[in-house]
Amino acid sequence: HAAIDDLRVIDGFKLMQKATSVKQVLDILDNYEMLSWETIPTQFLKDVKVWKTLFSNGQLRGQALIRNITRLARYGAFKDMMFAAQYAAALTDEKMIEQTRLHPINFLNAIVVYTEGQMKRTKTDWGYDSEQRVKDWETESVIVDALNEGFHRAFKSVESAGKRTMLAIDVSGSMSSKANGLDLSCAQVSAAMAMTIARTEPAHIIRGFTSDSYGYRNSGLTDLGISARTDLATAMRNVQRHNWGGTDCSLPMRWALENKVEVDTFVVITDNDTWAGNVHPFQALKQYRKVTGINARMAVLGVQATELTIADPSDSGMMDFVGFDSNAPRVLADFSAGRI
Image 1 (cartoon, one colour):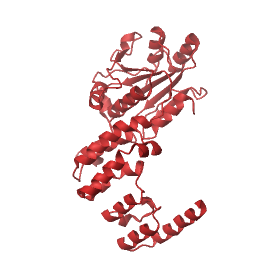
Image 2 (cartoon, rainbow, N blue to C red):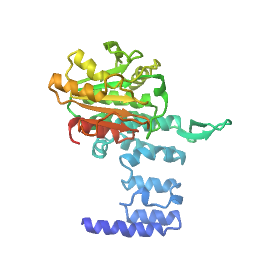
Image 3 (cartoon, rainbow, N blue to C red):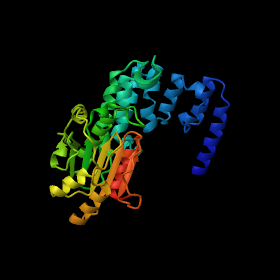
Image 4 (cartoon, helix red, strand yellow):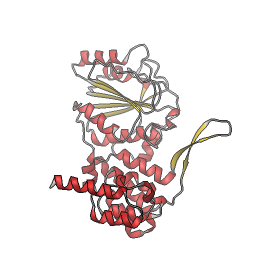
């Protein structure tokens, strides 16, 4: 049966490339319901009927369901209240969320873009690049509510690493800038990651780098007041503090040693070029392992593309992340659990 289905996909794709009208596209989709939206020539993807057919064929699931919301909104698809209700039900389908491994950040990104607009880069009168949100569609509350519900339900689909995790977050003012790979600010990404770790890792500590993290005392890290019950808006406010602190990646290990805190995985989230201070993070991690006997790991998430070079390439227990797309949280969990 699989071989026959594969041949049907090829036949349907060939026919779709020869389509000259929306009617032909719809007829092909009726006969070849397994065809995805990517197989359809671009000129026909502006027709609402095409998208509704794709949806009824079950071809809008997971990332495709989330990423095409603004496109459908732009074409007025959600003015059809029955279709909007069906789409909202799909967005909150826990079985679909689990099967497609959607992450809360997928929903968070969609909420921000759908309600506030897409980031567009423009040239200012002075020749500088400027980014601002542009929105050319109307927001429907039924979709917003579904995205918020999906955000909370997606936490259930996040696979826990099951490790004692310490998350240290850069909370400087520059965290309001955009994160690479998403239409979210670095602060929003950090808050979402903090919420994910709080809700999915039973053993966790969350701290923020403070303005005096250039020193060596415990005051370099502060409790951000984020727990499993914290709402997203509060978490984002707590992350986006304007103290312009440095990000010394060795500090979490030194703090854990001084406070006798047992940690399996150290995670640092920052938007800038991390600096090592007088103690290199690898040295601090090695010292922590030696003193505690714990084969601890360290991940540094640079949510903007910078010259991030913290991990020792010869140490499988250290990993650098540069940029941040919707797959990054899953890779982080796999790294923390030792699956990669």
